[in-house]
Amino acid sequence: GILHLHGYWRQPSSVILGQKSYDRILATPQLQDIFRSIWLQWSWLYVGCGSGLDDPNVGKLLRWGRAAFGEAAPRHYFLTQVATARALAARLDKPANLIAVGY
View 1 (cartoon, one colour):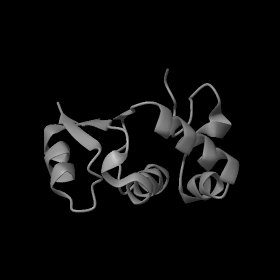
View 2 (cartoon, helix red, strand yellow):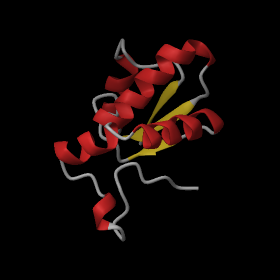
View 3 (cartoon, one colour):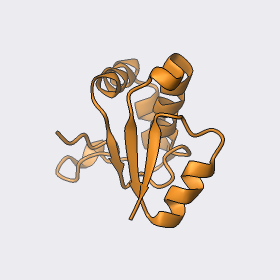
View 4 (cartoon, helix red, strand yellow):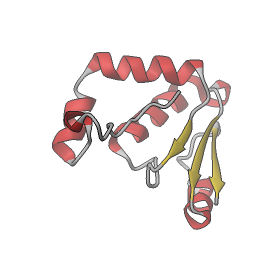
């Protein structure tokens, strides 16, 4: 399945447009619990999330997984341009379970 973390264009109210949108999502515990539950059940392929770790919502989810599970966390993949993939792979704060895939 596809989970649109930054919203779905056919549902304009779901689209993340700035800090207020991020604040709304980050302040909704039920939504964060859903993200965490799905994150634990399947491997994710992140597409179109910029650098990922700096994204307020995705970064928070990845930091939670790293703190809670460390090396035992499920593998997740981050599809991005080669230069961004290299930079992400070199970051010290990158969770070990996050694999950067460059194109």
